[in-house]
Length: 55
View 1 (cartoon, rainbow, N blue to C red):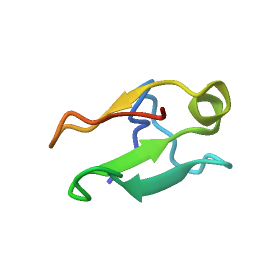
View 2 (view 1 turned 90 degrees about the vertical axis):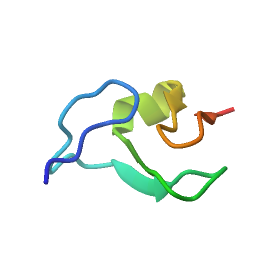
View 3 (view 1 turned 60 degrees about the horizontal axis):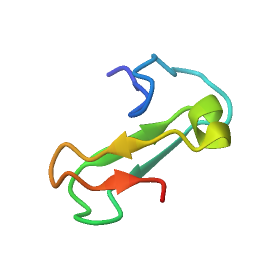
């Protein structure tokens, strides 16, 4: 399975600095973030509950 950034939708397989975590709101969906989107604090939205982060 390919890892795709939840913000920019780029394939991040083998990308250093990427992270993956459960949705902070519902805990059901998996969020994946590339290092660039983490650094610029790009928004992501949970497909399960609609939670928007990182703020």
